[in-house]
Length: 87
Image (cartoon, rainbow, N blue to C red):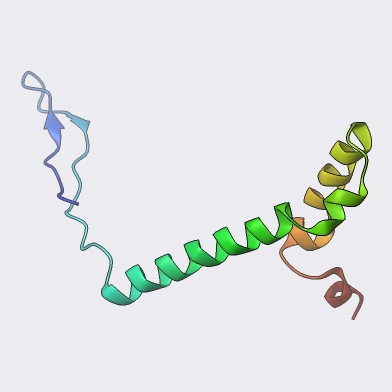
């Protein structure tokens, strides 16, 4: 992305908004890694949302509670399996 010069008050010469140097952009390796991670996120999200487990629950408040419990599980919120904390 291109950078921009700072905006300066014509009367006081104070900087109104700071400028920014141009961004060097992503390297080809970073672009490939970003694409890989986005594809992985899509695949994993699909696996979770279409897992047969959800078909075992009756529609209604219990289904909502189960999804909320899954989202707040320590493995999800801490980013590491709870079994590692016990070790």
